[in-house]
Length: 231
Image 1 (cartoon, helix red, strand yellow):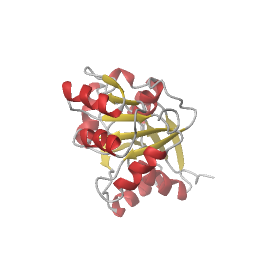
Image 2 (image 1 turned 180 degrees about the vertical axis):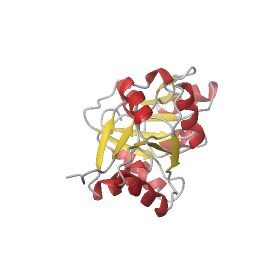
Image 3 (image 1 turned 60 degrees about the vertical axis):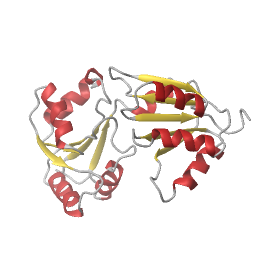
Image 4 (image 1 turned 180 degrees about the horizontal axis):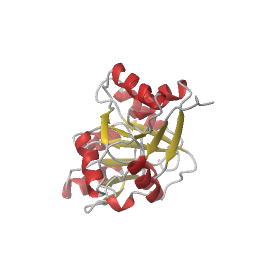
């Protein structure tokens, strides 16, 4: 059970693009907590400013030192309430928030989810593929281990989902073709919920051509049909 008089960590989902997607519960939480732990203070400050919220921000990102984790835990043990947010979407999915949450749970401190936007769920909802079971790969390794992961994607017997950056999306689609994905369907979602939201569908070669004819910018969610449906 959580320790008496300790604070609470609220894991708050924030918009992946359209600011109107911030829930009323998330908004109220951000207004009432003592601190907000975020990846990039500039990104979170912009969100807070749009709702006229002024809060003390604490950074927590992939390369945060152990001392920063201890600071956050210490504040919670002092009874302070903290909201954990990522730059966009739900903390803990393909970002370091999961490690912080695990450390806090080890201290028997209460953690409450404030659900909302997720690029993963948003893309899956419009994929048209079976999503009762899927494999989420997050971001593939840049170099070491990338080939192994690509073969896992190719061989997966369930729908595969991964995130990709603007710098590697073309490389990924070319590799999928080279590694033998065949004519399986690929769905690439770009800039979800934003002004230039785009969804590309086809096999990996077709999607690459569509993307190259458009604008290769933004963040991408890639969904790949399971192995076994088409050869």
